[in-house]
Image (cartoon, rainbow, N blue to C red; front, side, top):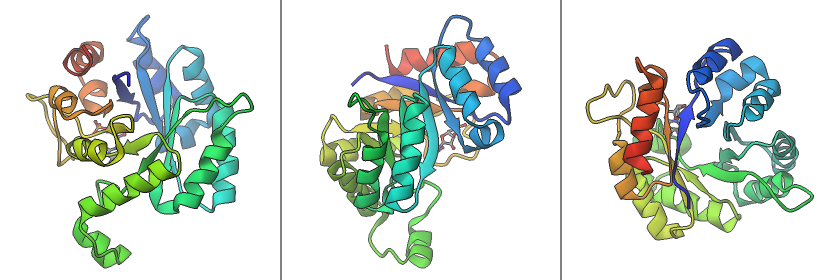
Length: 232
Ligand code: C5P
């Protein structure tokens, strides 16, 4: 599994994101486009960034009835993204339908990964609001196993869960981990954070890094630092 740093391009619009990517010159980092930018600019922003030579993780976290997810995934597949995602809580049937929709006529498809429990959900809230009475880590591992059974490629998880996900689902099952901060950096609103170097030791396959790069005085240097700690 090729390790890579994915830059979370959490910008409000096209102008901001393209100005940011221009700073990288000939370098083409793997970028994550989330709901904010996608809903602001629509599929054209995906096409434009793809045409500039970037790999794209389209982070739209689909969750609906299997038929709707299947048809929506087929649209995303035509956008030629490299990775997309959904909520594992949509059930195995929904995840299987997603794979079907995502698979192109030639058999190729973008990577598909699942959100297990959002890291913003505490065990307490899961119990009181979702009526799930199992420990949070057991739920996360169960959802990861369901994603694997459905044929998905991996999960989004905390770097601190990556090791256990690999134990349970195998080393080929990809872990994509946000919540990464430099040892000397500001953690912002993230709570359970780790450094790129530690994420590498734990076995994350991809780290998703936003503000430590986007808000840095020198974003390209911050990106290079992530790559040298995590990939090289
Ligand atoms: O700026 P920062 O490095 O915290 O950005 C992390 C990115 O990963 C954001 O786009 C955030 O929405 C996303 N993310 C996360 N935690 C999750 C899932 C996604 O921080 N559990």
